[in-house]
Every structure is written in structure tokens, then in C-alpha cells.
Length: 454
Image (cartoon, rainbow, N blue to C red):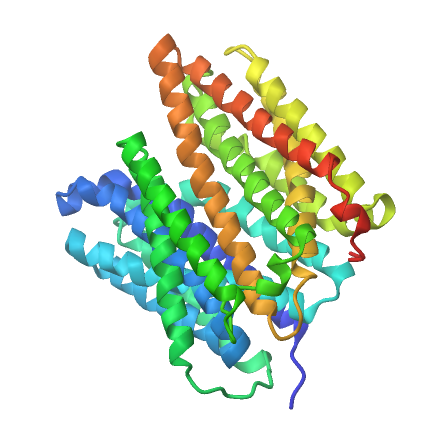
């Protein structure tokens, strides 16, 4: 069997990540044009939520299937589904067609994202993973800056359909690279009807949970009730999985307290990241009265330093130890978000750029250390399953946090009629949440006792 070309695969992983990152951000620029063109305001929120739902539900399922039938095959399935969904989105002439196409696209993204993590875990040793993830994470930073500019250009010169077509060449190139430069030896396994039922149960529980998160925007009580229903269903599912002959969840890693602690870090640090990425640019536009371009550029230092933090996270963890490094990073995050919560509305753009840099390097280290350490609990046989579960937790963390912070922002704004008060409340809330995580990590000896090395 031919050897896999790692350099070509780095290119494929990077392009795949960039493609899904662009798709997650560029659609924002075309919301009004899509609503006007299709004469459907309801489609606006649905084109975001159905993509999120379908990708989140598909992620752990694709991860499990990849361990059984091979990462190459699942990666290609995800890319093909994403490509088909993308083309159909661009060809859509009605809101119904667009929403159905976004579901297909989201399912495809659910097959792409966990495979990028799993391939990094398979192709590179622990020492190198942080550097490769740092490079790969830069795709999100570049996409967040390029998407508004590219989206605006396409809308002014062509039409909203082209914000989808722009990803077609990327998908084709990645498919070609994976086909010719990634070689994998995998034994074919028969389809297990019991596992199929497990996937259905798990997907149902996730759907109810995500639906509850979305419903909190319109009714807190109804949303909370649906969330509790979803959590209850997933708890029942987890207990059944513990006794299953062939579980689709990473049961053995989940039985380890260190792995659960790392998953909590993944959830909350990614939640803090999305809170920063959403509300600091809004602050720049509303309080400093600056342009959308300036609002986007406020994230540039964080993107650059996120890459640097990710790149050096492995060596820092080796020198300081995982627990000590996480403690330090969480302490910096708490102080930074408290600082944002105390800043006056007329704060200099330069000050926000400095805080953006600090948050970027801190979150970059925290996210990367949590992910690659959690991934080290995987064996060769369940690497994709674990990677899919980690990816799902990142998505859930951001979904929960952005909805929760939206309620905090709206409630404090309503009480004070001042937008800055809402932003301050958001940042203080994040500082409290990260502070609780610091307390948990500080009072746990799990990471100290862990024999995992980075």
C-alpha cells in the first residue's frame, strides 16, 4: 500500500476547514438579499439553524462510522454531500429548496469537521499536533476576515447565489487530494442494525436538545423544558451505551474523569471564544461608530495570536505541565473578560486590539491543549469516534453560550436602555463561567495524575 503524503493532506485538511469556515460566516453578508429575493423572512433564521442542527447531529455519527468503514471514505462522503448541498443552495429558487439544501450541506459539514481532527491525530505525533492545529485554526481567522469582504463583493457584482458557488472549487480540490494522496487500509464491516438504532436514538436526543436551545430565544420556559427533555433522553441513551456490545459513543474515555474535565474545558473555552467574537465587533460598530470593516479587523490580532498560541501549546504544556498551563490561561481569560466588562463605551480601538491579542493567544492555547489532550485518550480503533465527540462538544458549547449570552445582553439592555450595559453584562457573565472552570481545574488533581503527554 502506498504511503500517505502528509504535506498534501495538510493542504487538504486546511482547505476543508477553510471551506466550512467560510460557509459559516459568508452567509451572514447575504441574509437580507436572500430574504428579499425569496420573499421569505422566515428563511433567514432557518438557514442558520438547520445548518447548525444537521452538522451537529451528523458529526458524532460520521465519527463512529469512520472508525468502522475508514476515514477516507467518510471524509469523501462528507465532501460530496457538502458539494451537492452547496450547488443546490446556489441553484435555489425558493425558501423550501434553500432550507433543504442547507440541511444536506450541514450533514456534509458534519462529516468534514471531525475527519480533519481525526486525520491530524492519525498522521502526526502528539508533539506535532499542536503546530498543525495552530496552522489549521488560522483558516477560521482568515475566513472571518475574508468572508465579509468577499461576500460584499459577490453581492455587488453578481448575486447571493455565488456566496455558495464560491466553495465548489475548494470541495473539488480537496476531494482530488484525498483520493490520490491519502491511503488507508481498512477492513470492511457489515452494517449493524443495532448500531443504526443507536444512531437514531442519539440523533433524536441531540435534535431535541438543540431545538430547546433555539426555543429559548422566544420562550425561556419552553426552551428550558425542551432542553431538559433532550438532556434526559441523552442520559438514558448514555446509560444504555454503557452496556452495549458495540457502543457508538467513546464510553471508555468518558469513564475517565480527566477526559470529562477536558471535555468541559472544550465546551466552556469555545463558548467564551464565540462570546468574544460576536460581541466585541458589535461594540466597535455601536459604541465607537466604526465601519463593519473595522469591526471585522478587531478580530485580526486574536486570529494571529490564536495561531501562535496553538503552535506553541504543546511545548508549553511539556515545560509547565497541562494543569499549570490551563490554570494560568484560565486566570488570564478571567482577568481579560473582567477588563472588557469594566471598559467605558468610548474605549480606544487600540485598547480593544490589545485585549483581542491577549484573548487570542490565551484561547488558542486553552482550546488546543484541551483538544489534543482529550484526543490522546483515543485508541487507533476509536480515534474518529473521539474526534467526532470532541467536535460535537465544541459546537454545543458555542450554541449554548451564544444563546445564553444573547438573553443576558437583551435583558440588561432592556433594563438600562444602554447597549454598553448589555455588553458589560455579557463579558462579566463569561468571566464568571470561566472563573468557575478555573476553580474546578484548580481543585482537581485529575490532570496532575494524568500520564498523558503532549
